Structures are given as C-alpha cells and as structure tokens.
Image (cartoon, rainbow, N blue to C red; front, side, top):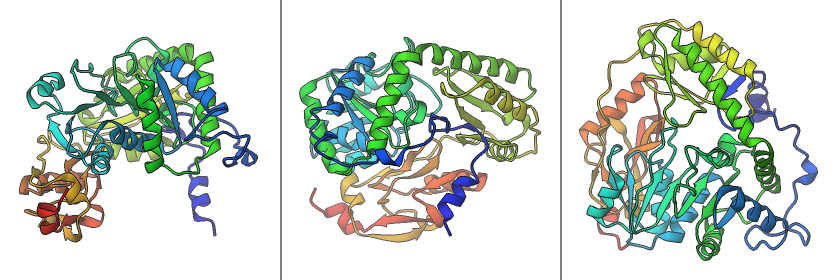
Amino acid sequence: MRPIREMLDAQQGRTRFHMPGHKGRLGPIDPARDVTELMGTDDLFAPSGAIAGAETLLAKSCGAGASILLTGGATAGMHAMALTFLRPGDRLLLKRSAHHSALSACVLAGAEPVFAPPDADLAAAARELHPDAVLVTRPDYFGRVEALPDVSVPVLVDAAHGAHFNWWESPPSAMRAGATAAVESAHKTLGALTGGAWMHFRDQDIARRARQMLRIVMSSSPSYLVLQSLDDARAWMDEFGRPALSETAELCEQARAEIAKMPGLISKNLGDPTRLYVETRGLGLSGWSAYKRLREMGVELELADAGGVLAIATAYDRPEDFHRLTGALRRLRGDGSAPPNLPAPACGEPCASLRAAALARTKRVELKDAAGEISARSVGAYPPGSAIVAPGEKFTEAAIEYLLQMDSLGAQLFGAEGGSVEAADKEDALHAPI
C-alpha cells in the first residue's frame, strides 16, 4: 500500500489553476541530484560557491542588496525575517488580514502584533502607534496591491504571492517599491518546487544576520533539488519571463472578456493581472459550490470563498488551459447556494500576550462553548488564512458566531479542526513572564 502515491496519481490529468506555479510541467525530477552538504556542494547557511553565486544573480534580478534562497517556504522566511528585525517586547504593526504565519513569527521573536483594520492607512497608523516595524501583505491572495507606507521603521513585506512581480514594471516588486526586506514564495507563481522561496534585503549586513536566524527555523539539511529549482526558476525568468508574463496577462484578460459574456459571472483585475477571481454570487451559486462543480469538470482551482473562486495563472499555463477554464465556467448553473452578504468578521478581544498564550498549557474546548476562553492558536478561515482570533485574544460570542457561520457555509477553518479549539491556561497566559 502506498496511499500518498495513490492520492497523487488521482490528481493527474486535471487542468491546474492552483499553485505550484510550474503546473506540473517542469519535467522529471532526477533523484541523483538529491545530495547533501559535501565539499563540492556549498552550504546554504555559509555559502561561498554555487549557492552564493545563485543568490548574487537573484539579488540582481530582484533589485535587492542581498538575497537568500529558502527551502522551507515563505513561512520559514517570515519567521527568520521577524527574528532579524524584532526583539522581545517589540511591536509589529500589521493588518488583521495578514497571514497567520506572521503571528507565528511574532511568537518566535517575542514581539507583539498591533492590528490595524484591513482598510487602514498603515503610514497614518504607524505615526499614531509608533511600532518598531510594519508588515505589509503585498500582493494579497486575490492579487490586490497596496502602496508601501513611508515610515521611519523597517517595512517588511509578505510578498509570498508576488515573486513574479520581479519580471515586469508594474505593479513593482516589493524591493523596487521600497521595502526594507521581503519574502517571496517562488513555488507559488514561478517554476520552483514546492517549498522554494527566497528573502530579499536592502542591506547586506542585515542579510548576514538573517541567514543566522534562518538556522533557527529551517532544516540544517536543505533540499538541493529545491535549491536547483529556485536557481532554474530565476534563470528561466531572466531569459523568458517578461514576454511570458505578458502573454499570461493577455490570456487572463481574454478570459475576463469571455467571462463578462456569461450571465451572473464577474471577473475583475484587482491589481495582479495574472490572478483570476470569478464572482459567482450573481449566478445564485456560492464559491464553494462552484469550486466543487468545476472540480467535477476536471478544472482544479486554488480556492473558493463565499462569493466566488480564484484561479492562479502563471507563465506555465497554456491557451488550452484557459479554454477549459472558461468552458467549465460557462457550464455552471445556479443552485441557490449563494449566501446573503456576510457581516464583517468579528474578531477576538485582546487580553494577554501573544507569546505567553501560544506557549501556555492548553485544553481542548468546543468552539461553540469557547466564549471567554483565551486562544492559544490562530483561528480563522481559508481564504485568506487570516486570524479571526489570534493567540492571546479572548473568544467573543460574535467571533464564535462568525466562525460557525463560515463553517456551515463551507469554509475551511484552521485552528478549529474537528469543531474544537486550543484554549490557553489562563494562569499561564495572564501571569507568565515574557
């Protein structure tokens, strides 16, 4: 029995509008190249040969002072970036819509998140709140791109979905837009293997410190297959990326024009021209129902939410892939599943240190009975992976009601698997030394 092999076998032959960006078209993987740190293979944590050369080329392509390859995904990069710029007790300003990996980074660094609303002006918020650093998610999962704030503290960017921005002019990449540091997930939109990502820094001295922080959060045995794929992805984009992305954006625009002719469906360019979010609510169809129906037609998308579905397009998609996508969308029919307009998320109530709560002793509590409990984990819904209740926040009746409503509609909850959550021991969370 090989259940994982069988699971992956069952995924073959489908039209893939989801990550990883290579869409299964990289060719066979040579296991002979799966090596370890040897005298001739360089060391990711102290590079002086091929890895150092690859990182120099990457920094040049991405407009950075220095770049570091990652085999632990953007999550490892987020954690190392936080450890590099934040000290215990520091305050990180970020929007509530940030990915929950940013909160895990704060746990590791001993920093406290300061949440701003999703539509907040971060520059104005920074002037009022005086944080030690600002974190911006740019672009977000749906391709929305915001300007980076002009502030006097480090501007850190979660650009997990924007690695391809380095090979076009507009919207500009995080580093060219003025970031102090940024993390990009190359496997999401480029031809890198899953787990392949990179960090960029404006200052080379800061990059040296970040590499040491990386030792704390990533395996000391990085995958050389992933490292090779990162270098190959950069080289391919340097040679072919600009025209390839232009063609992909044009195919997406053609798809939007086709979708505009389909009653009840809407697709707009939200900033990243290679992201296709299709609103299905006007068809009387929830995004979750549409996702399942498209999957039955052999078209696999990245995600669904209450109002629509999201397709990730990359330079590896072909015209026939878009033809299959629009053909499947044309066959969708309403089923009355579209929910009414949902209220804005009701979030948890801050009451304890994030780090103290995350490291506290815990107990399992049914989500429906969790009012008044202090969360020890990030709890929310995909997409976009933002915490409705963060560690150190108290579950409120309104937050619980929102989460249960999302679950009933078909959203995928995280931190509440099986209908229960991890509640922090209140003595640990409220009185533990930090």
